[in-house]
Length: 359
Image (cartoon, rainbow, N blue to C red):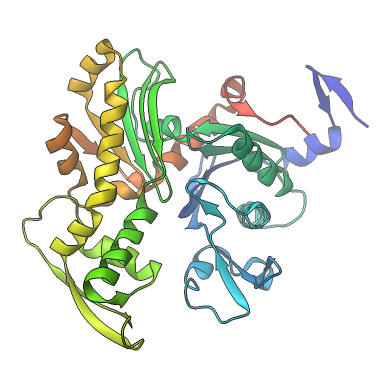
């Protein structure tokens, strides 16, 4: 039986089940998904990867091949198995697989498969369309969410980084994820001006792959490229340059071989995506009102997201923009921690967040 309350359909059974569910904040990223729960913080962080049987979208081993285990399969699967990243450039590319991945994470948080109907706060890129927003809501609802709230990634990242985004002063956040870079100037809990580009960690990895093809005739996979970026990658000259031995497939002989790549070479490979990120920051600053621009001279720019860990990136931005740049504490988790803050005051924020209708 259901009845109307405050303009919504109220179903006692759904409400009762919800009382036994744990509300969740989710940073649904292209590369990684992080889950935060109230009073506990981040309890789950796994790659946004799912392994399925080829041509069926059937997840292997009832969800055992989701997240970290699935990422280890990328580029290494036999012909009957495919490792899929269901999000591309910050948005859902495979609706069905995203739903299954979310269901796996929801059940893992609750450690059960029944009586699970949580409310979920999900971060989304500022540049996505209404159709893409609806895809996120639908995927979460089909995965078992009782109600879905959407928060823009720059807002969540700003809160997670500890910026005073509710005050009448400018805070600038640059959130560099796997698929998108979100640049925003925030004041009074709103985005004054923003720039969302589909250039981030994934494009950096692709740049390294392309560089090795052209300059070393060596073909490497995504995981190797990511490892190169993490170990010897940089955006600004290092005090001590280094090199790394890698392995891949020779493009002429089609046989495995080793090669060595220097940090200078990796920096050259990463220069184009780094340039695009700096240009996005410049474009955002050009459209910032004068009074808020004055605030940024003192407050500077805060970097968040996994891309913020690229060595020398802050220095490269400082040299070009001439504003102070700092990397947020634990930048990988800023967005997820921001969704957690919304969870803590969900009754208050539910009035301003974009949301699905109550089931």
